[in-house]
Figure 1 (cartoon, rainbow, N blue to C red):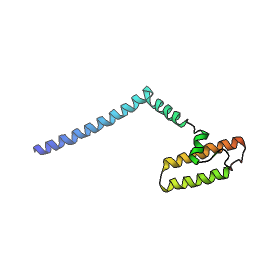
Figure 2 (figure 1 turned 135 degrees about the vertical axis):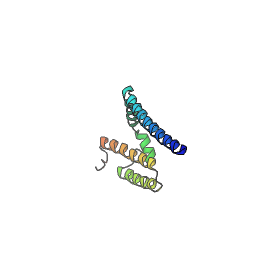
Figure 3 (figure 1 turned 120 degrees about the horizontal axis):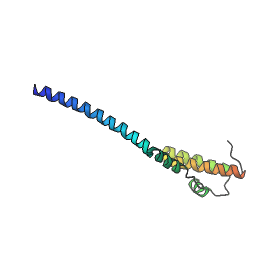
Figure 4 (figure 1 turned 180 degrees about the vertical axis):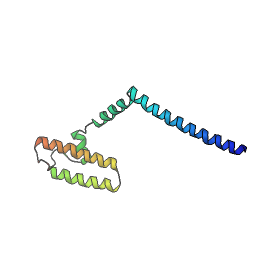
Amino acid sequence: MAAKILANLIVMGSGILARAVVQAYRQALANAAKSGVTHETLQNAARRAGKVMTEQEARQILGVSEDTAWEEIMKKYDVLFEKNAKVESFYLQSKVHRAKECLEAIYRAKGEGTPPS
């Protein structure tokens, strides 16, 4: 009889505790929204995304000079992208891709060997 009462108390207590945790979590989300914490987080993410790769950094990543033709840049890009795909380095793949995008924009602006779309 005592074991049955103890089991009921444990089950009821855990149910009450679970509801309290869910309610506290909801309240924390509401407080964060009111205080602007979520807005601040979005601003920080936008600031990080706003960091643009420089031409010099892009050229270093791809290992090309200012005199390199666009076709050679694409060859270097393909080789580096595939090498990093084999070793499953998404970070390095994204750096290589961003470097290509940066140089592509520069070459289009200059009109020198305009890369195909």
